[in-house]
Length: 253
Image (cartoon, rainbow, N blue to C red; front, side, top):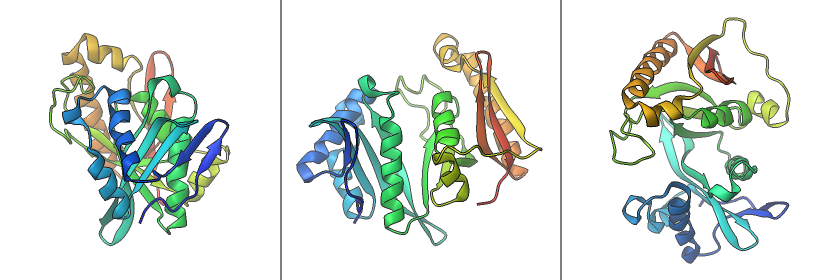
C-alpha cells in the first residue's frame, strides 16, 4: 500500500492521504480547477483508488478542510528497479507560488523513503521553464531522457497544438545531490557544462506563433538528443529575461 507517511502540516496547509475512497473524488475536482479539464479528460477517481491500493501514492493538500492540491503516483518497475511514477501534481491557481507544490513533492519523497524506494520519476514539457527550474534546481532532479511527442498531438489548449515532447525527471531522493539541494547547500557544477538554450518568452511564442514555437521545439529536441547520446544529463537551469538555458554535464547517481 502507498501513503505510509503521516500527515505533514506547514502553517495552515496540511498534506495527508485520503481518509476514505469518497475523498478520492477531490482528485477529479482538482484536475478541473488546476488545468480546466472537462470531465472526459480527467483521471477518474477509480484510478486514484488503484494507485493507492497497488503501491502508488495519493496525497492531498488542504487549507483547513478545503482541498487545494494533490499528488498522484503509480508503482513502477524498470529492469528490476522499483520506483514511483509521479503522474500528476497540481495546485489550484489561488495557491500557486506559495510552496504548496514543493510540500507535495517532499511528502512524496518522505513516503517513498519510508517504504525503501529510492527513485521517483515524472515527465515535464521542456518548454515549461518554471517547471524546469523547480524540478532541477529546487528539487535536485536530473534529466537524461527525451521522449518526442509522448502523448501525440492533442486538442488540449495546454499543448497549443505542438507535439507533446517530454523530458523525464529522475529524482534520486536519497542521493547526496538531492539532500544538499533540499537543505539549501550550493551544488558546484562541472567545468565542462554545456547549454541547451531557448527564449525566455517561449510560452508567449507558443500562443502568438505556433510555427516558430515548433521550430524552437525541434531544435531543442535535437540538441537534447545529441547531448544525451554523448552521456550528458540536465542538472541545472539558468533564467534571464532574454534567454533560458538547461545546463548539462556528465552525471552519475
